[in-house]
Image 1 (tube, helix red, strand yellow):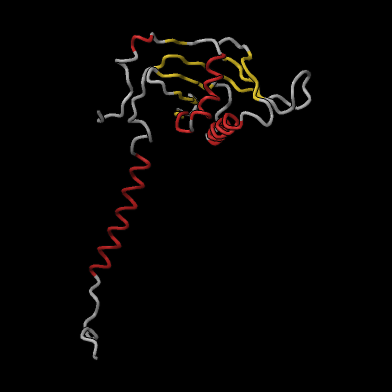
Image 2: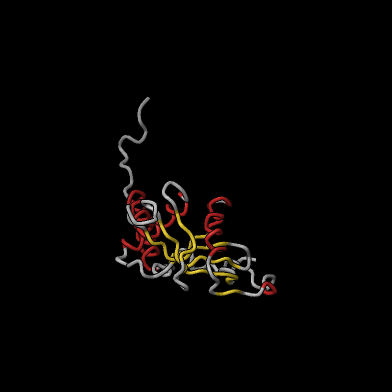
Length: 178
């Protein structure tokens, strides 16, 4: 059987249109990522019920009365040591802090700004890095992992407290959702 289209060249305009569409899509996506809103910036969070500013100070091996490789959890408001992250324990807290510290190093920021741990009126627990504006919603990692941070919240002195009567009226929502 002979080929009916052997003498007819393939039209070039569909190939050019497809290539143009791909280039425009890549450019539009790149422009949105560079000039668009910050990821998560459209989220309105519930007001804070309780928050604590915490510093995490790594102890050097061989210190008097300390275990090698431990991390002291310091209430930034009072300067009081509220807890200790022992070597081989508190893996989720350590991994979370490592990720936040890596982001600070990438942006050439120091460790002088404390992290903010907050319980919100809707019951969510967040860890914020004011230096980078990054906020982690800890419930996303499960109750056991968020419970590790909740322990630190319970041990520190309060910075701010919101009366419980506001709970029903101040629920956080995403813009445009019901």
